[in-house]
Image (cartoon, rainbow, N blue to C red; front, side, top):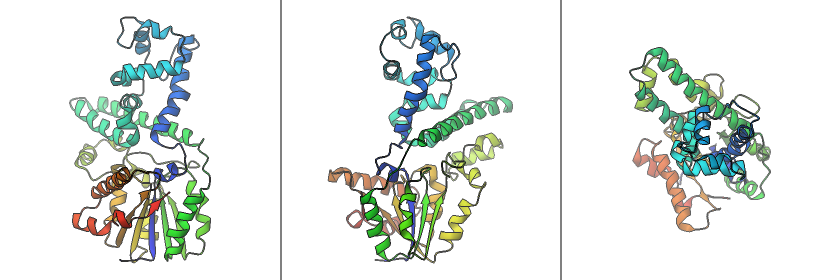
Length: 359
């Protein structure tokens, strides 16, 4: 089996989750519900607020109306907890919840939580594409107004996500420390390039142990909580994206990572310090879903002829063998959407039997 001296490590949210951190979009959705939506609901009910920056006023009036579409006055006048009331509304009026919130994108995420919250940026893109279809006969000024509002809704979610992650406090994990020692430090790699897609500082707990390597680099490609973060969609190769680009309205492109990457040198550093710098390299995936939100960047890494091996890890936290295999296969399928040559895909990916086990 080919063995390179150079390794690129993709660090995604699964790495944080392996530390027991509540950093999933589902965790974020619950946090935002409990700390923003529910308190706003409570203040409206108590009369402390008359105007809401979260709920549509028309919706509030309809909720109070016994004949309204969002339940009955009995729910508004109930003595159960505000959190229970909101969750009851979500359960009973799930498909219409996006109409209750001023932020329509946020409402869309809540109204189809299981399908949407794992991939916020993809939902933003899909909604943007649908918007352009719905308003294709609108005037340019009206189109710009609608798209700008859609982008503001994404900006709000980005800001709320950042505030949520400030509460995350990662701690060193002995099992993960042993994984790094056994599979990176003791495997003969001379150069390791960590490409971090997370905003958290979890990886920093481990990189001090890599000082004996020739070179070690850590690139927080999407920024950290101490700086401006990049949050948006990352597949600029699709036909739908190209239609948006060719429309000629800059606002249609404001939610794409491509244009944020141009604000600093982190993207070019991937080439300068890894892709172009190494004569060849292997790639280890630690917790990245290999989803379409980062497709363009991942294509540049995995489709390069210098990339000789792709390691997808087996999850040790999954005890049932069938589910563990399925998890590995899901990543393999995601990789197939990035690696353009199917024959090369089969040669590139280390098979399940020989894959590393990650805590």
